Amino acid sequence: MILRTLGLGFGITALIFALFSFAGHLFFLEGRRPFQLNFTAGAALGLALGLFVHRILRVPKNKAVTAMALAAVPGMLIIAAIGSHFAVFFPVLDPSLDKVFGSLMLWFYGFAFAGALWSARGS
Image 1: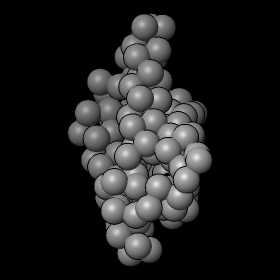
Image 2: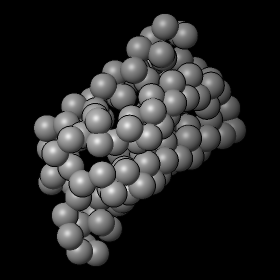
Image 3: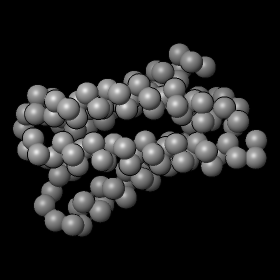
Image 4: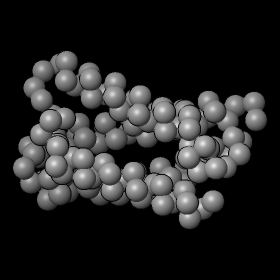
């Protein structure tokens, strides 16, 4: 379980990095509506990941929170390093967007944990 879970975490982190590297300019549009849509999508994707992490990794429901922690913590650490050197990793994006990027990632992972907690309840 540990290797599959860590693999999922590193895979998600690589996907996030690739997504922002190639399409980051589409995420950081001016205005309130794009901002709200980004955070709504981040919440929905994180929640879906948390709700289905036990199925994705084929672990019992009562291990969903442990699996989510093993998947999320390495990703959060890598994302924190990327956020602290935002201009180096994403040179075409405005460096002042590092806070929005970090907030969006915390939002995603927070909802992933909430989904895992919800799916593990009563197990």
